[in-house]
Length: 594
Image (cartoon, rainbow, N blue to C red):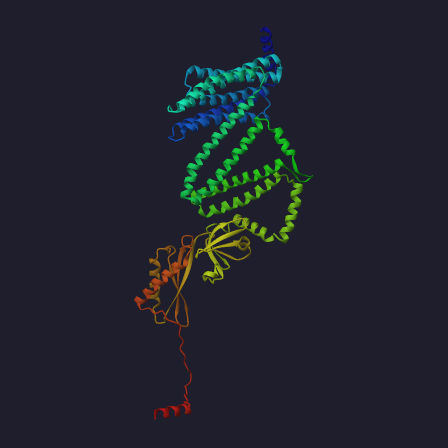
C-alpha cells in the first residue's frame, strides 16, 4: 500500500517537473482549451434558454440533441487541435474533460428520459462519471511520463468498475422504462420483461467479471463511437423529419420554389449521414486495415492510372455527394432570390451554380477515381482534339452558356427575339422566334413563344447571331401601332381618338404618356402611328393588346365619321381622249336592233 502511494507521489512529481520544464506550452494550451470550453458552455446555456422560451412542438427533443451536440463539438475541437498545440499534459487533462463533458450530458439526458429520478441514483451516476474521467486522466498521464505498470493496472481497474456500474444503471433503467411503456393489457409481455431483469443482471455481471479479469476486452473507443453514432442518427432523423414536415408540404403547394430544394436537401442529408458514419467507424472501430486492403485491391494499376475497388466507390460517392451539395446551393440561392423579389437573377444564378458545380464535381470525382494529372492531361489533350473534330459544337454551346450567365446578357425571364421559326405546322410563317426565356441549361436554352411552343435554342446562337433582348436592362418598351385614314379626315380628330383609346387601355403605361405621330402621305390614306409604352415583362404577349386597340379604334372612327379607306387609284389623262368604235361591232349592233 505504502509502495503504491510512493509510486503515485513519483508520478505527480514527474508530471510537475514536466509542467515546469514546458510551462509556457502548458499554459498556452490550457488557456486556449479553457476559453473554448467557456465559450461552448455559454453558447449551450444561451441556446437552451432560447429554446425554452419558444413554444415548439419538438422543444424537448431539440434540448436533448443540443445537450449532446455542444459537448461533441468541444470533443472534436480538442481532438483536432492536439496536433497543433504543444502542451502534452494539458491535452491529456482537457481530453478527459471533454469526454466527461459529453458523458455528463449523455447520462443526464438518459436519466431524465428513462425517468430515473431517484436522487441517490443520480448522485451515484455523477460520482461514477467523475471517477471514470479521473482514472482515465491518470492512466494517460502515467503512460505519457511515468509508465508504471502497477499504477496503470490499479487505475484501469477502478475505471472498469465505474464504467460497469454506470452502464448497468443506464441499461437497467432502459428495461424498466420499457416495462412501464408496455400497456397493461399486454400482461404476458410485461411478465417477460419483469423476468428478464433478473436474467439480465446475472448475464451482465458475468460479462463484467470477464472484462475485469481480461478474459474479454471492450475498448473505450467503442463506447464513444456508439455515442457519436447515436447522436448522428438522432440528428439525421430530426432534420429529415423537419424537411418532410415543412419543405415537402410546401413543395406540394408551390413546387416551382420548394420541390428542387426539398429533394436536393434530402439527398444531401442521406449521403452526409453515410459519410459521417464512415468517419466514425474509421476513427473508433479501427477499420484502417480493411480500408487499406480495399485500397490495394487494384482493378487497373499503372504509373498514371491507379483504379482500386476503394477508389471506384470513392469516386462515385464523391460525385453524388458533390452533386447533392451543388443542388442544395443552387436551389437555396434561387429560393433566397425569389424571396427577396429578384426573380430576374434567381434563375440565372441557379443555372450558373449548376453548370460550374457539375464541372467541379466531375474533376474531383475523376481524381478520386484514380486518374492522376499524368493521365488527366493526355485525356484533356485528346478531348481538345475531339473538340476540334467532333465535339466543337458541344463545347461551344457549353462555353457559350457560361458566357451568357457571367455577362448577364441573357437571363431567365427575358423577352427575346432571334432568327428562326417557332412552328410552321401551326401556321407560323415568321422568320423570327419571339418568346420568354424559361431556362438556360448546360448546352441549350428554352424559349417559350406566345403560342405555347417551347423552342430549344443552342447557346452558341445567342453569341454568334444578333439577338433582340426586349428586357435586358429595363422592361419598359415603346410599341408603334399604324393607322391609315382617308385624306378627308381631320388629323387632330384622329389624334384625339387614338389617345383616348390608348388611355382607356389599362395595360398601357401612363408614364411616359402615349403619343400620336403623323408619319406619311400614302397613296390611298394618310398614316398615323400610335406610340404606347408597356412593361414587356408583365405584357410580353403584345398582339392581344394591339388587337384590342384596333377593335376600339374602329368603332371610335365609325362614330366620329372618320373613314378608313381601302386601296384605290385614280387615272388622269393629260390630253383629250379620242374614242373610235369598231364599225363591224356597230353593224352587228344595228342588225340586232332591227
